[in-house]
Length: 428
Image (tube, rainbow, N blue to C red; front, side, top):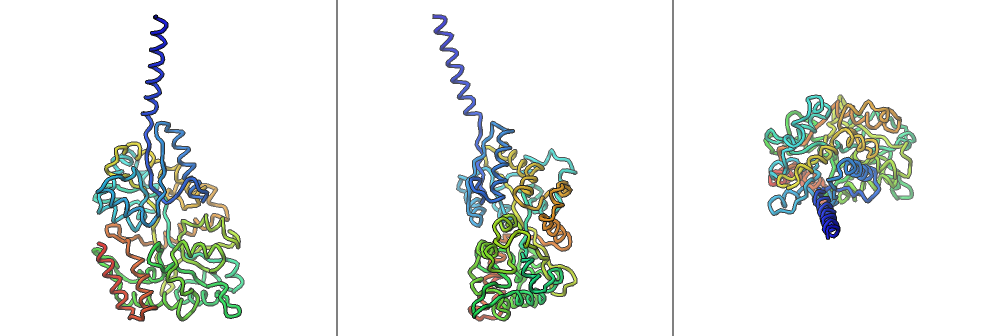
């Protein structure tokens, strides 16, 4: 009888121990546009990051729910009111203002950075990126990796055309180079000089914006767009001229988004192309003309006296303010944005590191990683961050629509820019 009782107690103990183990593990849900089951460099980096984190924190499991990158932030803001949000979400620069206004972001200062030293905070060398995550004195988003819309170019085609990329300092010089790089045979364009994403969805910055920024004052003072001016008209008509006059950009660019342009550059359809530096590793891995032939330009300016503004964009990590697993979610957020995570984003994922302490790593001294130093230099020389206190979701899409209205509907450039201003105002 005693043996039966001991056996029963042992069985109950094991059962309870099993239940205790099962309930002790907390699952943290993450929304991102990456899928760790796929094989792009950033997806491999995320997969490794999750594996390393779970090995160090066996009580926490990370569940990734991949989302469309354009729809993910607005969906997160909406579901803050209706419920059903993930514990963590990635937020891009265009939606940081929306995150602030929605109230959906938890205070990561209290959850994470309150225990950091001043040196740890100062390690984030892109101060504008750190400040962008602040809202009313609270840190609601941590930088994961910074990006920018850049102009990629083919070194081999530049050399064949006798063009020095470093000499392309003005917008006119860029247009002349794009025209010269355009290859037409038997009435068919085989290589376009410059690919641009001018669709109103999945946008990146184009000359319509970068050229507009080259003026005194703030173009978004008080969250009021200031496009309809002489500089705006010059930037819009210049962008259109690449399609209509120079014929260095195809008309289909008006419906091409950034994914299209990236794929086309990889396939060899463009000598230069506008897309994100965050895609460098994917482009380098897949370009049929070889990674050694890929370069990145500084943005031109009207005068050429200094480079045009290099946008500061990228992705930030935010936690849901109503998450019942905020402590566990914050722990993984800190890991992704911490030294170990940033090293993986950089060395495996092909991103510019957000922490200056990592720039001394021998990895970045290799010739194939010279583009990282180009990006750091460009941000240091002339950078611009979208106003995060505004909803900038319609910023570039409105300008792209203005270009299309000017080209296709033949409306005056000033009127097209006024329409873009109204669209921006309606989004606030």
